[in-house]
Amino acid sequence: MTTEPEDRIDPRIERSRMVILQAAVEELALVGYGGVTIEAVAARAGVGKSTIYRHWPDKLALIADAFETFHEQMVPDLSSRPPRDAILLLLGHVAEVVVDSTFSRCIPALIEVAERDPRVREFHHRYAADRRQALVDQIARGIRDGDFRADLDPELATMALLGTIFYRRLMTPEPLHPSNAGELIDTVLGKRTVTPDGG
Amino acid sequence: MTTEPEDRIDPRIERSRMVILQAAVEELALVGYGGVTIEAVAARAGVGKSTIYRHWPDKLALIADAFETFHEQMVPDLSSRPPRDAILLLLGHVAEVVVDSTFSRCIPALIEVAERDPRVREFHHRYAADRRQALVDQIARGIRDGDFRADLDPELATMALLGTIFYRRLMTPEPLHPSNAGELIDTVLGKRTVTPDGG
Image 1 (spheres, rainbow over the protein chains, first blue to last red):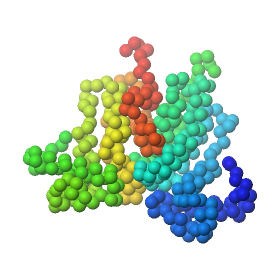
Image 2 (tube, each protein chain N blue to C red; image 1 turned 135 degrees about the vertical axis):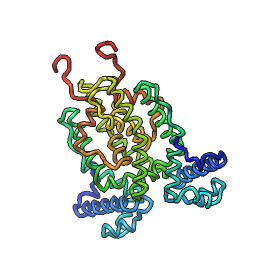
Image 3 (cartoon, chains in turn orange, cyan; image 1 turned 90 degrees about the vertical axis):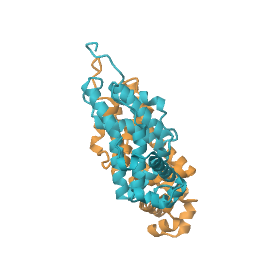
Image 4 (tube, rainbow over the protein chains, first blue to last red; image 1 turned 30 degrees about the horizontal axis):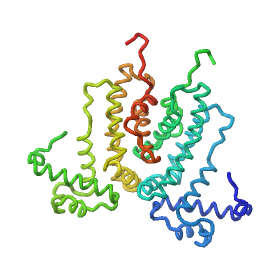
């Protein structure tokens, strides 16, 4: 996590910051991006508007910070895991967030506003790209290690994995259950196989 | 295409119906579902409101009919094609529609309203399920014919194929180009292979 010493040294300020960010995503999920106001977020967080404006210049900056912050808190540690296990952990995590979370309830609103507002679109696309990168990296590592087919395109395979989870959430009554992440990986990346030399 | 003799025998009535349906999807793409009014659709189509209410009880019925009708007109004929070719045709078609069409501009609005309105949600999910079915059928046929891995789940593989196209459209600046449909099929269903007995 990046640190901004002037903001984060005092635990009371950090706590107030988290309360405001949580209030922002709750408002977004409730009323959609267009309906979010700094007033309502301030009221929900129990702070004054000026407290919010002291840290964030506008609504998009506040919501973008909320998304980045809550994501940082949720990312699993992948450093010591084989690629397939790391991917299983990442996808299970995405599926959990997408099935049921305040963030999940914000996705449709974000998609709709991104269509009309270039600044939100730029944030939405960049945020999604940043979130994809860990998966792209793990698939590329798995290809290098010989765990996955050499002809896989890591970017396209990542889109197929995440695309399934988002399609299920946005276009069907039944989101992908996190426990089915393994089956999804088998479908897109192929089942775990023993290499010809037995390795 | 199903026919309703009383409505469709007269080509002038059919033509007027198509003009109204086209006006409905154009309004939807322009102002979002919440903003569509029968007045505005009537004005755009150059007809009276009563003409619209004679055929459709409300906004959702009108928009649902527009989606169904334009879809019927666009479906390629698959009857005589091998499964992989049929899937390539279907996916290329979906990618074309999703990259650039009035329908494509309606998707974010539909997703957002489906989140909040149970009737729109029911239509949105049923429409997507109906559209998926041809792909599910062709993948199941390809598995029976030995063209694809026997352990593939046709439903899950369909979600991975369509999910990639929708993810690219909704979460990235670059929709999948229809000419990349083949690469997507290779990724999810595996490359075309020669069977051990040379068949």
